[in-house]
Length: 268
Ligand SMILES: Nc1ncnc2c1ncn2[C@@H]1O[C@H](COP(=O)(O)OP(=O)(O)OP(=O)(O)O)[C@@H](O)[C@H]1O
Ligand SMILES: [Mg+2]
Image 1 (cartoon, rainbow, N blue to C red):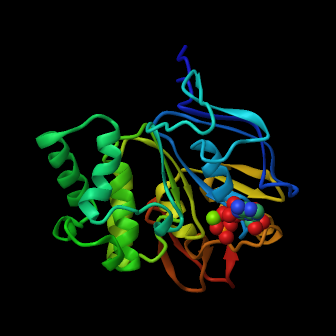
Image 2: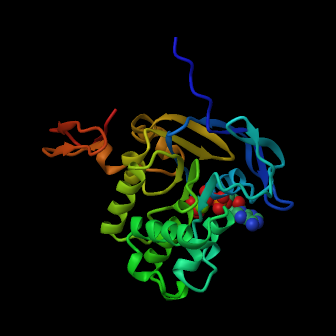
């Protein structure tokens, strides 16, 4: 009998409120296995960013807890093993140059001298920003800023990566680079995104949140391909999960090919 691996990240009955407002998240619970990639989808304002900020300890939950392996994380404590790439790059980048910003997290982990320089150079190379190491962060384009944020997180080699709209502002080449980079990583990740095609390619499992709770948690193709469920929560079935008259479709994630003859329908 195989014993299931202990989850690397567990959210237990999390309820989160901003200030004195009503709860944004209520009784949220899920677990992510080591190496598992999970998509987090839901309409604007559903609480995706709020959830990611709570998982990293930036926000303090009103109730519930977050565990990394068997360890309960204390809110407000820097936990480099759970690293967040912020939705807005300007919330994350604050050092004068790209290299210094990327170095910040690694220095916090105790890296110095040549080892620090190597780690920074490698992280920048992985995201394709090696040539911009000495550029002031405010002189980067929006897409370059997002990649710099990712490098700043990769340099800490976290156990869990939390990505908030990672493909926002990226051109197609950099979006593809990002997808391939993330596919090649062994870390568990939770990816909040409105780019549902990216979610389909990267994440075998999806959490759909709305109205403060998890309304679906299951295989990406069955959650995102459920037209009724998606419409009920302000979403659309992604293009690659629909059939188009007379068109051949090969879905990149599953490799399946379909030829449709009828009107467009969501693939079951
Ligand atoms: N600092 C704050 N103070 C008060 N309310 C906030 C704060 N931050 C977010 N909210 C509210 O909490 C709710 C959830 O916001 P959140 O940013 O988590 O949504 P989201 O799912 O990430 O949305 P989006 O898809 O637009 O990124 C929204 O109603 C938002 O207005
Ligand atoms: Mg958000």
